[in-house]
Image 1 (cartoon, rainbow, N blue to C red):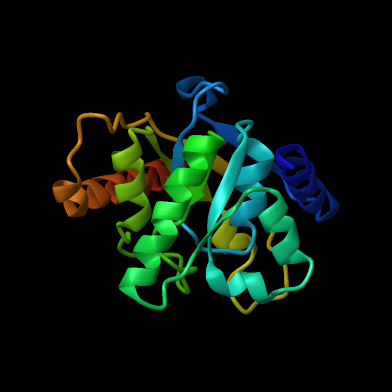
Image 2: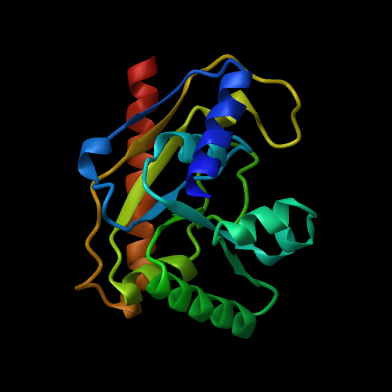
Length: 206
């Protein structure tokens, strides 16, 4: 199913004539599980991540997506993790089930901690639930900037822009010695790094 997701993503981008690339692959190992934590500004963020990151990877998805026929079955078959954000207790229970699933079947996680797509391209504050799970499990966190996707397709738009898009990976953050009580500070540090990576990419294109 990981191969299916990667192939589907490449077909989506290729059929749209979209130029895409990745930088920073030398910073990660394909044999290691990571939490790839990045910004979310467009419907093309997910295809870009899957098309460029070679690791076996699943996403943390909101429980509402389980209501979509066929798509929900595909996510479930691929081992993707659903989180019920309707209240705190349900969200915690969802994350506990996710930890058990990851222990039984190790894989990388694609995480968009903003919670929803940005309407203006600016990176919003990062929610801490998924980051806490990475710390508790000792899985390294890779800051990830998905660049150019907002200009390519903004929320509510049907037209494609012409900008190339790119996944930019930062240095993995080792979580084994981190404490969940510092989750707010850690989330802010990861967000700051994603912003830095994105700003550097944009500066190179000027």
